[in-house]
Length: 294
Image 1: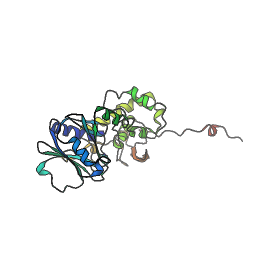
Image 2 (image 1 turned 60 degrees about the vertical axis):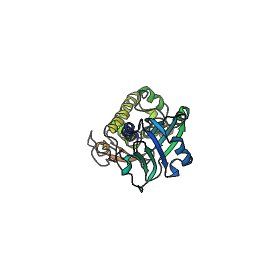
Image 3 (image 1 turned 90 degrees about the vertical axis):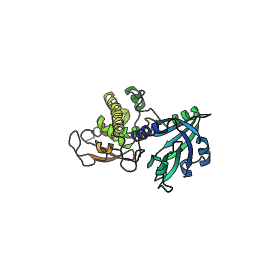
Image 4 (image 1 turned 135 degrees about the vertical axis):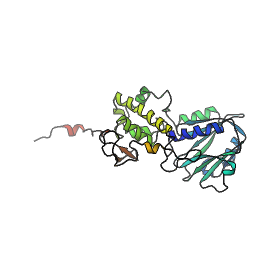
């Protein structure tokens, strides 16, 4: 699934080509893409408006449209979605997995392709609708000034969930997925099954820095292509060539040389170094701590 660095990579590629252009046509080819809204209503709300901005929140891409009431097209790539920028003459009539097409006034088109059809597109009317939409879905933006050690400590305080599950919760931290959670936890030296509320102050600080470093490294490599993710021009990302632990089961840890292991955490395949990320000790119940009677 494309995560924050992959979506930010696409945003940086699309923004200079889309901002200032007019969205001549929005063609919804798969009603599931915008359900439950009817495709015609979604297209009518966006058609003919000038594109003011292309932004990102977490894993969402936002296209802000001018003209009358503020309109925002919100897209999510989900598992296998891609956004491709092509010239009109490079857009064949029968393109595999095409779900929606955005036609710009300069002849270019932005194509939303999605093999598994989980990706979505929604139109929101007004700034309040945008704020309400994301306030109910997303937590703190990890690359914003608000993502401080103190903020992370407050989010983690008293929580018993494993730290891997905590990082994957978009309502807590927006944009971190399986790849970057693994990479961040390794950088911080924290085992993914450790209850997040038990992290010491130094570990919280290290984890905050590791999340930012991992995401920035992913952006610098223009994302990771494991299966479906592609840049707006169809090229692959390269962060998969720089993974420290993710998908490196059996390979030597880049720090200590121990074999990387794979386990399940938060329902996801998770990669750890057993030496650099020591597993948390199971707490004994009060009954088991009592001495046995002879």
